[in-house]
Length: 304
Image 1 (cartoon, rainbow, N blue to C red):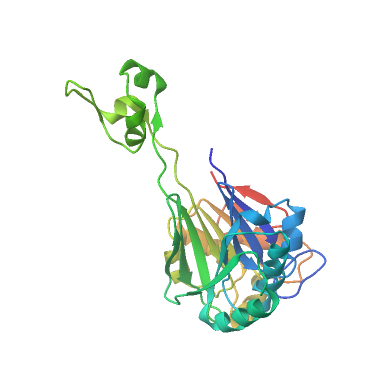
Image 2: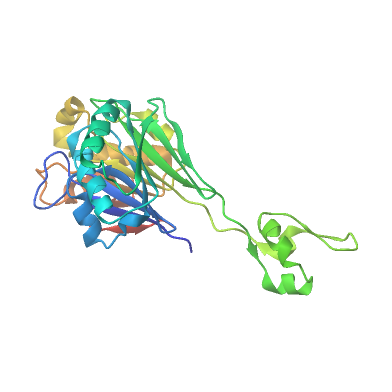
């Protein structure tokens, strides 16, 4: 099965601790790497998790708070030392474009690769697409402009039945079209329906990253139908008012978003430094939504 894997590099909130790094994830999609947020320590954690810097092509920054972007200058500089080639695109809110353009101009002036900064539309929309995946952004509700991201695998091809291919003597030149759903037309004009020579394609999967945000049902609407959702869960129920004041969500609210969105599983993170373990956060999120995974550095989640 094709790889679609979430790698957790950091899941702490604003203050780094001995337990957690600031926010950073890497999506490994068929051996191409997409980074989401880039807190301090991101490049060190990439080394620990044995990720190849050369495969990193896009970085998505949700908002311009330091715990989500302070690791970016160091990572971009290190990539040159590894003689990365080609192009790397950093997608970030407009507020950060001028600042990071100057940083890149100063520290990466001899870069071995092209660095492109692409501003995010605050209204959201598709920001990357190729033959196999789309990435779209959507608004979140934090103290500064903030965006979430959805990674959607495009529909997969149907599976050929080898016995039927052999029986009907189907030419190799027509196999791809049949996998796309075409019928097979024999030289005498006889039509062999696609369902006779293929089986259903594997299910395409999707992943949503909900960074810092207040609880808002518009978030659930934006990620409705996504299989796996990552949602910040900075605080427990006792800190509800502080969460509201600081533009964050509680674990219970994260669970409610996953339930309202009809997700299959929920990953929580962005833990406040006050929590030694995420147990209370998992417990409260689980009271709203059954399938909850606690993020932790080094965790790899295969999306099936």
